[in-house]
Amino acid sequence: MGPIRSYFDQIWVYGDPAIHDPLRTGEIPEILGSLVRYTGYLAAGRVSHRRSTLLDKPYVLTMAGGGSDGLALVLAAAGAEVPEGYEHLVITGPQMPMEHRRLVQCAAGPGTSVVVQTRDALAEIEGASAIVSMGGYNSIGEIMSTSTPALIVPRTEPRREQLIRASALARRGIVDMCHPDDLSPELVADWFRGAAGTRVDRSGIDLTGITALALLAADLLATEASTPERRRAHAAV
Figure 1 (spheres, one colour):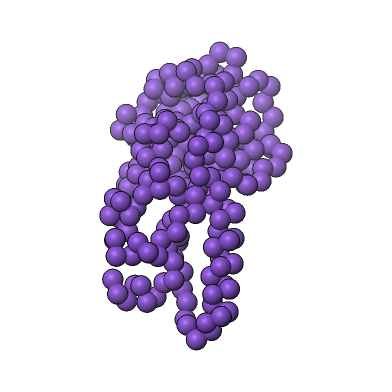
Figure 2 (cartoon, one colour; figure 1 turned 90 degrees about the vertical axis):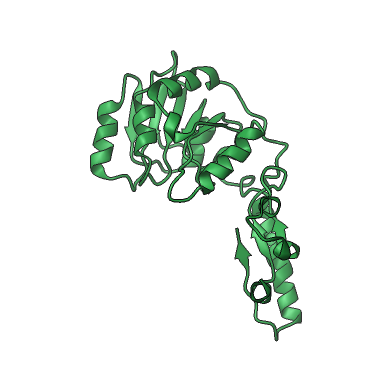
């Protein structure tokens, strides 16, 4: 690990160690511990714009990030019974293949609208009564900047990063989690019925990473200016 320490000044962990600490789990070797800086989640301070979808009723939401590997999620959600008094918006993501989108359209039940993408996903999340989503970092960051209840269905292959993230948050009651092997229209429908219209308090988590990054970068730049002979590189996790 000696060469690694000589290449990097700091390792930025975009999270809250009270939720998941990669030093404690061994994902980052202990010998690098002095380089680690926890920024908090990149959540608070995200800016949303006007919603681009117009629904007549309160709505629940399903989104699959880019959509390239989200077929199982959106198929199950599209076929779920929508809670009474609500509509259901399904966002497949622009990377979902056309043939997969057709399958989702065919699976959509009454009260469910399927779109490829929206102008601002955060605005749709803020307006939703509940959301089902994959566990990508950006999606989680947007969700955690709101009080919208969320069921996360993480990807488990080829990497377990989403599963680790969703499991850690679910243990603290910040989100609910469903393993993809357990996913079904009935499970999604049951979750929507219980969650729609409730709110989740996420104020106890460090969500200030966007602000913290600016401060960390400014500190490194100031250090570099005072020691110009050093060659610097920085890592983010």
